[in-house]
Amino acid sequence: MPIQLDATSSTLQEQIENDCRVDLSCCYECGKCSGGCSTAYLMDYTPRQVIQLIKLGAKEALLQSKAIWVCVSCHLCQDRCPAAIDIPRIMDYLREMSCGEGVVSETNHVFLFNKLMLDHVFKRGRVSEAELALRFNLKTGQYTKDVKLGQRLFFKGKMMPFVPGVRDRRAVRKLFKLYRPGKEG
Image 1 (cartoon, rainbow, N blue to C red):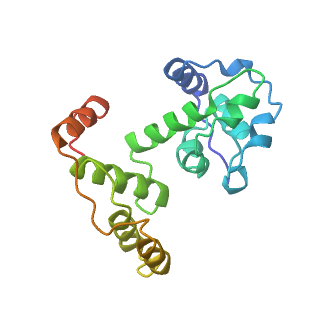
Image 2: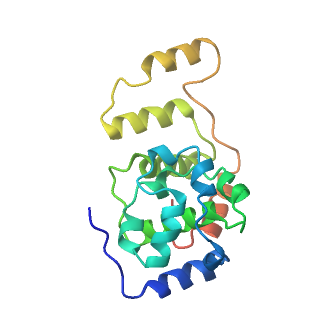
């Protein structure tokens, strides 16, 4: 699939550099970030290629990429980087940008899982793994996935079907409002 380059490539790079407090001109594309990335094999663009795409201004390709959703923010790329570029922060920023511009689809399972989990925390103050797995599997059409695993976890006392909520749910909602102003969940 051809990558569309944006005429305002420097604008994208400047925006990311300013908002993420990084200097992408320090990247000399050694590839250590991609070489150490434990999830690079699942990505359509490696961390090094993501930096390259930012420099090229390929905003559309970045926001539609699988790479920004597969990154688990382990910071190994940043630790290996001679310039100490905070790639996990950049990936997080691109995820936020993707959501903000409505590029992410409901078929993106990572996005769906995160959304369901945050909604659950907002409503109850904590996560019930059993309920979260059930809701996720129903939304993705995988109705019987994890049933045997769930049974084993339940009988070993590792997963309870119902988890009580926290006492002060208002405090949890206040935290959400601090980090997600204007949103109710």
